[in-house]
Amino acid sequence: MRVGVHTGKVMGGVVGQRQWQYDVMSTEVNVANQMESYGLPGQVHISDSVRQQLDEEFELEKREKLEGDLIRDMDTYLVKAVLKEVSSCALDFATQSSSRLPEDASRVCSKPSVTVTSSIAVPQRHAG
Image (tube, rainbow, N blue to C red):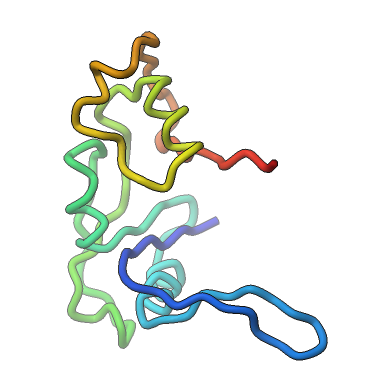
């Protein structure tokens, strides 16, 4: 499995007349798709705009320039490992909110920290 992650503006909507589907569309979605296509198996491939949001929480490996028409001039990175502890409160917050954890979260969160042992922690949204 390969994963491509990019940030930016998207437009979402229902597509189709007989069998409706929800879809998101934009150049940013196409960039993420190309990043996945040019990624390596078992790796998460991120754009520089994503890297800037990570606050040095992950060990990254900068990739050489790639040939894809949308990503040819972009700096991209592979996520190699988690560097910072992730508190269980931060994971709880991430599963219930689309926002970033507030800077003062340490005062709000009273649960003990946990160390993420896998190479990447991806919170899942709970249905219902």
